[in-house]
Length: 119
View 1 (tube, one colour):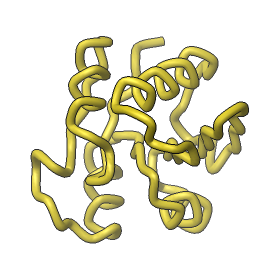
View 2 (view 1 turned 120 degrees about the horizontal axis):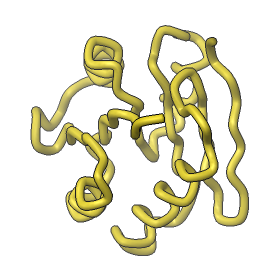
View 3 (view 1 turned 180 degrees about the vertical axis):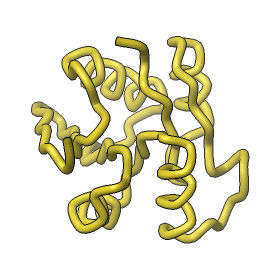
C-alpha cells in the first residue's frame, strides 16, 4: 500500500512536517497553508483532499467519531519533547498500521491505539 496523504494541524511543528516529507510522505501543513483555520475548515480540507489529520487537538478525536467522512485522524497524546521525537512516533505508528484511512490512531507514550471510524 502507498503512504497516506497527511494534513498536519497547526500545532504540529514545522520541523516535524519536514522530517515526514523527508520520509516520503505527501504532507501539507496548516501553518504553511493558512494559519488560523477553524477545526471545521481543517476537517473539510482533509475530506476534500483525502488527507489524514495529524494533531495534538483532542477535539479531532471526537470529530472523527462524530463525522465519519473524515479520512482519518492521528491524535498525539505525547509530550512534544522535540520535533524529531514527534516525527519518530508518527512514523513508528504508521509502520504498524496496514491502512490508516478510516482510523482514529491515538499515539501515547508507550502505546498506540487504533479505532475504526469507517470502512
